[in-house]
Image 1 (spheres, rainbow, N blue to C red):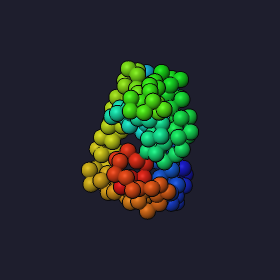
Image 2 (image 1 turned 120 degrees about the horizontal axis):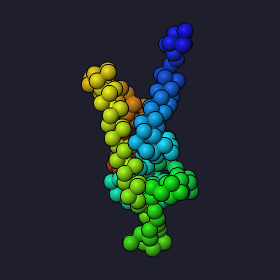
Image 3 (image 1 turned 45 degrees about the vertical axis):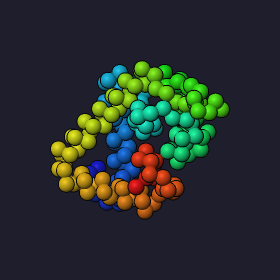
Length: 160
């Protein structure tokens, strides 16, 4: 009965439910790796910071939110010991968010869990189906993006 009800869902509802299932599974797996405090905003921001430190303003831009909104997310990382703030060497008025050693380990765990989940999905549906689904999701971001896509930043939430 539950499966039959799922068959009548449209794309948007299916997308939302799939995203929720993905987040919950990632959280379960990260919990097994010793990171039981996973939050839905962690995957993006931790992988972003894994590549390079960032200012709050740049993170807000990448997340398509205000600097204050980004600050709230960063504050949770600071509280959990995953990041620290340091003055920006190029502008003392700005602070850079830098991963701590624990944060770097958490970012690696997130990257590994996502790679595992992607591989499992690829094995389940096949390479072509996964590529097509990814293409649909990219098109969805282009067609319904509420952000300014004028930048080529690959981490930009609305980037093409």
